[in-house]
Image 1 (cartoon, rainbow, N blue to C red):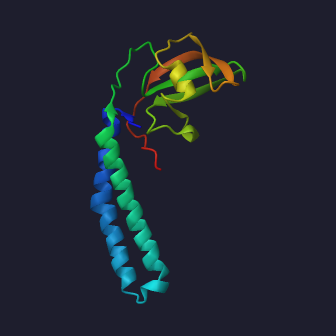
Image 2 (image 1 turned 90 degrees about the horizontal axis):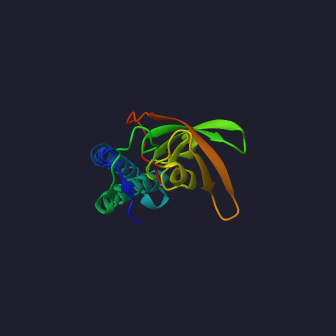
Image 3 (image 1 turned 180 degrees about the vertical axis):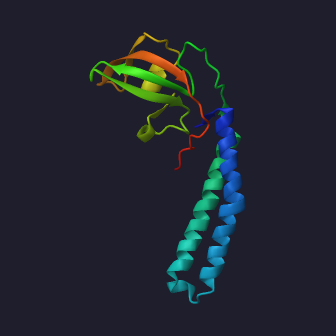
Length: 166
């Protein structure tokens, strides 16, 4: 699947790749070399742990490079009065009779623990391009749906969101 990324997502991924190549790779190689010096490799836990960490770093670099190679670049621009990428949205959840605040982001930055929802999630798809006052049906799956009302839209992209780790 091709990831949909914004220019800021691409920049953050490139920064992570550079950090992993210049800093983490060097640290991992040093840890492998140091562990190798402790003797018998067949029973050397430090050596195996250092090799595993080195391989995980290289795997992450390949994953990110492949993601960039296959990415579809999308615009972060949206109309001021519509819900768009990087907007913080206050929603009235009718079932709970409560307001909740979410930030709408690309799937790579989605993090439900921090109320960052992807434009590809059921809620994200439902509220994208909606305006304040719009009542929206969110179809979570065939058996579950609920209504939300858009109460407030703010453009709050501070550029500090992290790319989700896999």
